[in-house]
Amino acid sequence: MADTIFSKIIKREIPADIVYENDSVLAFRDINPQAPVHILIIPKVEIPKVTEIEGKKHAQLLGELFDAANKLAKEMKIDKDGFRLVFNCGDNAGQEVYHLHMHLLGGRKMTWPPG
Ligand code: 5GP
Image (tube, helix red, strand yellow):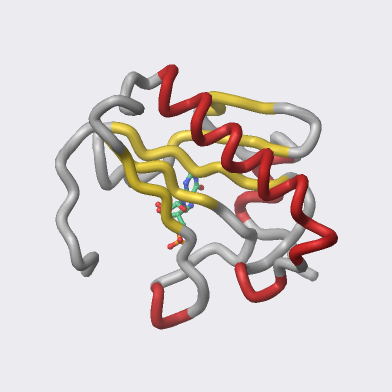
């Protein structure tokens, strides 16, 4: 499978504003932020999209993505007022990068439904 831009960020082949890392997860600021806080939280293993998640195989990894989101939300002080977590999956959702990523968005009032 061809490297995505996110696997290049994992390998430090292209720069990113990294805000959190552990053995299995990396988090960095979105290059085109849609809110005052807009962070992408990704697994280091290649999972292209939500439909390729296998519950039993990836349960711990998914837990780590959510742990990272909660930790970062606290650090960025958006946990009290609230924030949004988004996974775009496929064309209709506007997924651009086919390496699984959770968007952590906060710091402003969000609207619903999303565009
Ligand atoms: P998607 O639409 O696939 O859910 O979200 C991909 C996100 O990755 C977009 O919000 C886009 O701004 C962000 N993005 C794309 N290329 C780069 C990059 O090279 N660096 C960073 N930090 N974010 C990127």
